Length: 389
Image 1: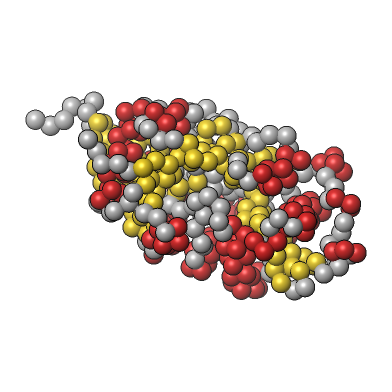
Image 2: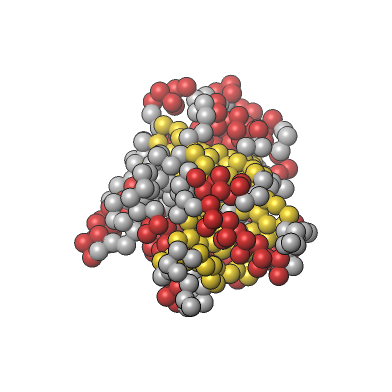
Protein backbone atom coordinates (compact mmCIF):
# COMPACT_ATOMS: atom_id res chain seq x y z
CA UNK A 1 0.00 0.00 0.00
CA UNK A 2 1.49 3.40 -0.97
CA UNK A 3 2.05 5.92 1.85
CA UNK A 4 -0.76 8.40 2.51
CA UNK A 5 -0.40 12.04 1.55
CA UNK A 6 0.20 12.89 5.22
CA UNK A 7 3.04 10.38 5.73
CA UNK A 8 6.44 12.07 6.23
CA UNK A 9 9.27 10.43 4.27
CA UNK A 10 12.93 11.50 4.06
CA UNK A 11 14.69 10.55 0.83
CA UNK A 12 18.23 11.27 -0.43
CA UNK A 13 18.55 13.41 -3.54
CA UNK A 14 19.60 11.13 -6.40
CA UNK A 15 18.35 12.70 -9.66
CA UNK A 16 18.83 16.01 -11.49
CA UNK A 17 15.16 16.82 -11.03
CA UNK A 18 15.44 16.28 -7.27
CA UNK A 19 18.60 18.43 -7.17
CA UNK A 20 16.68 21.20 -8.90
CA UNK A 21 13.89 20.83 -6.34
CA UNK A 22 16.44 20.92 -3.51
CA UNK A 23 18.09 24.12 -4.81
CA UNK A 24 14.85 26.04 -5.42
CA UNK A 25 12.83 24.71 -2.47
CA UNK A 26 13.03 27.76 -0.11
CA UNK A 27 11.31 30.10 -2.57
CA UNK A 28 8.41 27.64 -2.81
CA UNK A 29 8.26 26.81 0.92
CA UNK A 30 8.41 30.38 2.17
CA UNK A 31 6.45 32.15 -0.57
CA UNK A 32 4.07 34.65 1.01
CA UNK A 33 5.66 34.50 4.49
CA UNK A 34 6.14 38.00 5.96
CA UNK A 35 9.71 39.18 5.44
CA UNK A 36 10.78 36.50 2.97
CA UNK A 37 12.38 37.63 -0.31
CA UNK A 38 13.42 34.88 -2.71
CA UNK A 39 17.12 34.68 -3.61
CA UNK A 40 18.04 34.26 -7.26
CA UNK A 41 18.00 30.63 -8.39
CA UNK A 42 21.24 31.41 -10.25
CA UNK A 43 22.94 32.44 -7.00
CA UNK A 44 21.67 29.36 -5.16
CA UNK A 45 22.80 27.12 -8.02
CA UNK A 46 26.34 28.47 -7.66
CA UNK A 47 26.15 27.72 -3.94
CA UNK A 48 24.61 24.23 -4.00
CA UNK A 49 25.13 22.55 -7.36
CA UNK A 50 28.02 20.03 -7.17
CA UNK A 51 29.09 21.11 -10.65
CA UNK A 52 29.35 24.75 -9.56
CA UNK A 53 30.34 24.83 -5.90
CA UNK A 54 34.06 24.64 -5.07
CA UNK A 55 33.30 23.05 -1.68
CA UNK A 56 32.66 19.70 -3.36
CA UNK A 57 36.37 19.47 -4.23
CA UNK A 58 37.20 18.69 -0.60
CA UNK A 59 33.88 17.68 1.00
CA UNK A 60 31.55 14.69 0.87
CA UNK A 61 27.95 15.93 0.89
CA UNK A 62 24.59 14.17 0.87
CA UNK A 63 21.33 16.03 0.25
CA UNK A 64 17.97 14.93 1.67
CA UNK A 65 14.42 16.06 0.90
CA UNK A 66 11.44 15.63 3.22
CA UNK A 67 8.24 14.60 1.44
CA UNK A 68 4.56 14.50 2.33
CA UNK A 69 2.96 12.64 -0.53
CA UNK A 70 4.34 14.15 -3.73
CA UNK A 71 5.12 17.51 -2.08
CA UNK A 72 8.62 18.40 -0.75
CA UNK A 73 8.28 20.08 2.66
CA UNK A 74 11.90 20.40 3.75
CA UNK A 75 15.55 19.87 2.91
CA UNK A 76 18.93 19.37 4.60
CA UNK A 77 22.56 18.75 3.65
CA UNK A 78 24.88 16.44 5.59
CA UNK A 79 28.51 17.48 5.14
CA UNK A 80 31.89 15.93 5.84
CA UNK A 81 34.40 18.69 5.13
CA UNK A 82 37.63 16.71 4.96
CA UNK A 83 39.75 19.88 5.18
CA UNK A 84 37.90 20.88 8.34
CA UNK A 85 38.25 17.43 9.94
CA UNK A 86 41.97 17.51 9.26
CA UNK A 87 42.36 21.11 10.49
CA UNK A 88 40.35 20.59 13.69
CA UNK A 89 41.75 17.15 14.40
CA UNK A 90 38.22 16.06 15.29
CA UNK A 91 35.58 13.99 13.53
CA UNK A 92 33.03 16.80 13.33
CA UNK A 93 30.50 16.77 10.52
CA UNK A 94 28.04 19.50 9.62
CA UNK A 95 24.46 20.00 8.60
CA UNK A 96 23.31 22.84 6.42
CA UNK A 97 20.81 24.16 3.89
CA UNK A 98 18.14 23.36 6.49
CA UNK A 99 14.87 24.76 5.25
CA UNK A 100 11.42 23.46 6.12
CA UNK A 101 7.83 24.35 6.73
CA UNK A 102 7.37 25.42 10.38
CA UNK A 103 6.82 21.83 11.52
CA UNK A 104 8.81 20.25 14.34
CA UNK A 105 8.34 16.73 12.96
CA UNK A 106 9.86 17.72 9.61
CA UNK A 107 12.87 19.47 11.19
CA UNK A 108 13.50 16.58 13.60
CA UNK A 109 13.29 13.97 10.82
CA UNK A 110 15.69 15.91 8.60
CA UNK A 111 18.21 16.29 11.44
CA UNK A 112 17.92 12.58 12.17
CA UNK A 113 18.66 11.74 8.53
CA UNK A 114 21.71 14.01 8.43
CA UNK A 115 22.96 12.64 11.77
CA UNK A 116 22.56 9.04 10.65
CA UNK A 117 24.51 9.63 7.45
CA UNK A 118 27.30 11.49 9.27
CA UNK A 119 27.51 8.68 11.81
CA UNK A 120 28.05 6.22 8.96
CA UNK A 121 30.93 8.41 7.75
CA UNK A 122 32.64 8.04 11.13
CA UNK A 123 31.71 11.48 12.48
CA UNK A 124 31.40 11.83 16.25
CA UNK A 125 29.80 15.29 16.44
CA UNK A 126 27.44 17.35 14.28
CA UNK A 127 27.53 21.15 13.95
CA UNK A 128 25.57 23.67 11.94
CA UNK A 129 23.86 24.93 10.01
CA UNK A 130 26.41 25.95 7.37
CA UNK A 131 25.83 26.15 3.63
CA UNK A 132 27.98 24.35 2.73
CA UNK A 133 31.00 25.55 4.70
CA UNK A 134 31.81 27.83 7.61
CA UNK A 135 33.11 30.21 4.93
CA UNK A 136 29.67 30.35 3.31
CA UNK A 137 26.19 31.09 4.59
CA UNK A 138 26.13 30.19 8.28
CA UNK A 139 23.60 29.97 11.07
CA UNK A 140 19.87 29.64 11.58
CA UNK A 141 18.12 33.02 11.57
CA UNK A 142 16.53 33.56 14.99
CA UNK A 143 16.13 37.35 14.84
CA UNK A 144 15.61 39.76 11.95
CA UNK A 145 13.01 38.03 9.78
CA UNK A 146 11.27 41.34 9.12
CA UNK A 147 14.46 43.25 8.28
CA UNK A 148 15.61 43.89 4.69
CA UNK A 149 17.30 40.83 3.13
CA UNK A 150 21.08 40.83 2.70
CA UNK A 151 23.36 39.03 0.27
CA UNK A 152 24.63 35.63 1.50
CA UNK A 153 22.51 35.83 4.65
CA UNK A 154 20.02 32.95 5.01
CA UNK A 155 16.37 33.59 5.95
CA UNK A 156 14.30 31.18 8.03
CA UNK A 157 10.92 31.28 9.77
CA UNK A 158 11.21 32.19 13.46
CA UNK A 159 10.02 28.77 14.62
CA UNK A 160 12.80 26.71 13.02
CA UNK A 161 15.46 27.58 15.59
CA UNK A 162 13.23 26.38 18.41
CA UNK A 163 12.56 23.13 16.56
CA UNK A 164 16.32 22.50 16.25
CA UNK A 165 16.73 22.97 20.00
CA UNK A 166 13.71 20.73 20.65
CA UNK A 167 15.43 18.04 18.57
CA UNK A 168 18.23 18.00 21.13
CA UNK A 169 20.74 20.41 19.59
CA UNK A 170 22.36 22.78 22.17
CA UNK A 171 23.29 26.32 21.11
CA UNK A 172 27.03 26.66 20.44
CA UNK A 173 27.45 30.23 19.11
CA UNK A 174 25.47 33.24 17.95
CA UNK A 175 26.50 35.23 14.87
CA UNK A 176 25.54 38.88 15.18
CA UNK A 177 24.85 41.42 12.42
CA UNK A 178 24.66 45.18 12.88
CA UNK A 179 23.07 47.78 10.62
CA UNK A 180 25.29 50.86 10.24
CA UNK A 181 23.73 53.94 8.65
CA UNK A 182 26.13 55.83 6.37
CA UNK A 183 25.45 59.50 6.90
CA UNK A 184 27.19 62.64 8.12
CA UNK A 185 25.89 62.13 11.66
CA UNK A 186 27.37 58.65 11.93
CA UNK A 187 30.66 59.79 10.42
CA UNK A 188 30.87 62.68 12.86
CA UNK A 189 30.13 60.36 15.79
CA UNK A 190 32.66 57.76 14.74
CA UNK A 191 36.20 58.77 15.52
CA UNK A 192 39.31 56.64 15.56
CA UNK A 193 40.95 57.11 18.99
CA UNK A 194 43.03 60.25 19.00
CA UNK A 195 41.85 61.10 15.47
CA UNK A 196 44.80 59.09 14.18
CA UNK A 197 45.23 59.03 10.42
CA UNK A 198 46.75 56.31 8.28
CA UNK A 199 50.22 57.25 7.09
CA UNK A 200 50.73 59.96 9.68
CA UNK A 201 52.46 60.24 13.06
CA UNK A 202 52.38 56.98 15.01
CA UNK A 203 50.71 55.37 12.00
CA UNK A 204 53.40 56.46 9.56
CA UNK A 205 54.26 52.84 8.74
CA UNK A 206 50.61 52.11 7.92
CA UNK A 207 49.23 52.44 4.38
CA UNK A 208 45.98 51.47 2.67
CA UNK A 209 45.29 49.79 -0.68
CA UNK A 210 42.21 49.46 -2.85
CA UNK A 211 41.02 46.59 -4.99
CA UNK A 212 42.41 46.70 -8.54
CA UNK A 213 40.25 44.83 -11.04
CA UNK A 214 43.30 44.28 -13.24
CA UNK A 215 45.09 42.57 -10.34
CA UNK A 216 42.05 40.99 -8.72
CA UNK A 217 43.40 37.42 -8.89
CA UNK A 218 46.68 38.26 -7.13
CA UNK A 219 44.96 40.50 -4.58
CA UNK A 220 42.45 37.73 -3.99
CA UNK A 221 45.30 35.46 -2.93
CA UNK A 222 46.59 38.15 -0.55
CA UNK A 223 43.09 38.47 0.86
CA UNK A 224 42.78 34.69 1.26
CA UNK A 225 46.05 34.40 3.18
CA UNK A 226 45.20 37.35 5.40
CA UNK A 227 41.68 36.03 6.03
CA UNK A 228 43.00 32.59 6.98
CA UNK A 229 45.53 34.14 9.35
CA UNK A 230 43.06 36.61 10.90
CA UNK A 231 40.33 34.04 11.56
CA UNK A 232 42.49 31.10 12.60
CA UNK A 233 41.52 29.66 15.97
CA UNK A 234 37.97 31.05 15.93
CA UNK A 235 34.97 28.78 16.38
CA UNK A 236 34.04 26.78 13.28
CA UNK A 237 36.81 28.37 11.20
CA UNK A 238 38.05 26.37 8.20
CA UNK A 239 40.95 27.68 6.07
CA UNK A 240 39.72 29.04 2.75
CA UNK A 241 41.29 27.20 -0.20
CA UNK A 242 42.74 29.03 -3.20
CA UNK A 243 40.13 27.58 -5.56
CA UNK A 244 37.34 28.68 -3.18
CA UNK A 245 38.67 32.25 -3.27
CA UNK A 246 38.90 32.13 -7.05
CA UNK A 247 35.30 30.93 -7.23
CA UNK A 248 34.22 33.72 -4.90
CA UNK A 249 36.06 36.31 -7.00
CA UNK A 250 34.42 35.03 -10.19
CA UNK A 251 30.97 35.36 -8.61
CA UNK A 252 31.57 38.79 -7.05
CA UNK A 253 33.65 40.43 -9.77
CA UNK A 254 30.65 41.97 -11.63
CA UNK A 255 29.57 43.65 -8.38
CA UNK A 256 32.89 45.04 -7.16
CA UNK A 257 34.49 48.46 -7.51
CA UNK A 258 37.93 49.66 -6.33
CA UNK A 259 36.30 51.42 -3.35
CA UNK A 260 34.94 48.13 -2.00
CA UNK A 261 38.26 46.76 -0.76
CA UNK A 262 40.37 48.06 2.09
CA UNK A 263 43.74 46.42 2.70
CA UNK A 264 45.90 47.92 5.42
CA UNK A 265 49.66 47.29 5.24
CA UNK A 266 52.36 47.81 7.84
CA UNK A 267 55.74 48.45 6.22
CA UNK A 268 54.39 46.90 3.03
CA UNK A 269 53.02 43.73 4.69
CA UNK A 270 49.23 43.15 4.76
CA UNK A 271 47.93 43.22 8.35
CA UNK A 272 44.18 43.97 8.07
CA UNK A 273 41.42 43.97 5.51
CA UNK A 274 37.76 44.62 4.86
CA UNK A 275 35.67 43.85 1.79
CA UNK A 276 32.32 45.47 1.03
CA UNK A 277 29.90 43.49 -1.15
CA UNK A 278 26.87 45.28 -2.68
CA UNK A 279 23.55 43.81 -1.62
CA UNK A 280 22.26 41.82 -4.59
CA UNK A 281 18.72 41.90 -3.16
CA UNK A 282 18.60 45.66 -3.90
CA UNK A 283 18.47 44.95 -7.62
CA UNK A 284 17.00 41.43 -7.65
CA UNK A 285 14.59 41.30 -4.70
CA UNK A 286 11.51 41.99 -6.83
CA UNK A 287 12.30 39.31 -9.43
CA UNK A 288 10.99 36.36 -7.35
CA UNK A 289 14.16 34.28 -7.73
CA UNK A 290 13.48 33.23 -11.32
CA UNK A 291 13.39 36.30 -13.59
CA UNK A 292 11.48 36.48 -16.86
CA UNK A 293 13.25 37.80 -19.98
CA UNK A 294 12.18 41.30 -18.99
CA UNK A 295 13.42 40.58 -15.47
CA UNK A 296 16.88 39.71 -16.78
CA UNK A 297 16.94 42.97 -18.75
CA UNK A 298 16.02 44.87 -15.57
CA UNK A 299 18.70 43.04 -13.60
CA UNK A 300 21.39 43.76 -16.19
CA UNK A 301 20.48 47.44 -16.38
CA UNK A 302 20.47 47.81 -12.60
CA UNK A 303 23.81 46.05 -12.33
CA UNK A 304 25.45 48.24 -14.98
CA UNK A 305 24.16 51.41 -13.31
CA UNK A 306 25.03 50.09 -9.82
CA UNK A 307 21.58 50.73 -8.36
CA UNK A 308 22.41 49.50 -4.88
CA UNK A 309 21.55 51.28 -1.66
CA UNK A 310 23.00 48.82 0.86
CA UNK A 311 26.01 46.54 1.20
CA UNK A 312 27.65 44.07 3.54
CA UNK A 313 31.09 44.25 5.12
CA UNK A 314 32.67 40.79 4.97
CA UNK A 315 36.12 39.39 5.73
CA UNK A 316 36.88 42.13 8.28
CA UNK A 317 39.92 40.88 10.15
CA UNK A 318 43.39 41.54 11.55
CA UNK A 319 46.50 39.39 11.34
CA UNK A 320 46.89 37.05 14.28
CA UNK A 321 50.34 38.35 15.23
CA UNK A 322 48.79 41.68 16.20
CA UNK A 323 46.01 40.21 18.35
CA UNK A 324 46.12 41.59 21.87
CA UNK A 325 48.20 44.63 20.85
CA UNK A 326 47.11 48.27 20.76
CA UNK A 327 47.63 48.38 16.98
CA UNK A 328 45.63 45.17 16.52
CA UNK A 329 42.72 46.67 18.45
CA UNK A 330 42.92 49.85 16.36
CA UNK A 331 43.10 48.35 12.87
CA UNK A 332 39.40 47.32 12.50
CA UNK A 333 38.43 50.89 13.41
CA UNK A 334 40.85 52.22 10.82
CA UNK A 335 39.39 49.91 8.17
CA UNK A 336 35.81 51.00 8.89
CA UNK A 337 36.88 54.64 9.08
CA UNK A 338 38.46 54.29 5.64
CA UNK A 339 35.25 52.78 4.24
CA UNK A 340 33.21 55.62 5.69
CA UNK A 341 35.50 58.18 4.07
CA UNK A 342 34.74 56.54 0.74
CA UNK A 343 30.97 56.81 1.13
CA UNK A 344 30.82 59.82 -1.23
CA UNK A 345 32.02 57.53 -4.04
CA UNK A 346 29.52 54.78 -3.18
CA UNK A 347 25.70 54.93 -3.38
CA UNK A 348 25.02 53.05 -0.13
CA UNK A 349 22.73 54.41 2.55
CA UNK A 350 23.72 51.70 5.03
CA UNK A 351 25.99 48.70 5.41
CA UNK A 352 25.79 45.54 7.46
CA UNK A 353 28.61 44.52 9.76
CA UNK A 354 27.84 40.85 9.72
CA UNK A 355 28.48 37.51 11.37
CA UNK A 356 30.41 38.80 14.35
CA UNK A 357 30.69 35.94 16.84
CA UNK A 358 29.01 36.70 20.15
CA UNK A 359 32.13 35.44 21.91
CA UNK A 360 34.38 37.89 20.00
CA UNK A 361 34.32 40.71 22.54
CA UNK A 362 36.76 42.89 20.60
CA UNK A 363 34.75 42.99 17.37
CA UNK A 364 31.49 43.26 19.31
CA UNK A 365 32.81 46.29 21.18
CA UNK A 366 33.78 47.95 17.91
CA UNK A 367 30.39 47.25 16.30
CA UNK A 368 28.44 48.33 19.37
CA UNK A 369 30.39 51.57 19.61
CA UNK A 370 28.65 52.39 16.32
CA UNK A 371 25.34 50.51 16.69
CA UNK A 372 23.91 49.66 20.15
CA UNK A 373 22.65 46.16 19.33
CA UNK A 374 22.46 43.63 16.49
CA UNK A 375 19.49 43.75 14.17
CA UNK A 376 19.89 40.11 13.06
CA UNK A 377 21.08 36.97 14.84
CA UNK A 378 22.00 33.67 13.21
CA UNK A 379 22.59 30.70 15.52
CA UNK A 380 24.87 27.67 15.41
CA UNK A 381 24.22 24.38 17.21
CA UNK A 382 26.37 21.36 18.05
CA UNK A 383 25.81 17.95 19.62
CA UNK A 384 27.46 14.55 20.01
CA UNK A 385 26.47 11.84 17.54
CA UNK A 386 25.65 9.09 19.98
CA UNK A 387 24.49 5.73 18.68
CA UNK A 388 20.70 5.61 18.28
CA UNK A 389 18.77 3.52 20.76
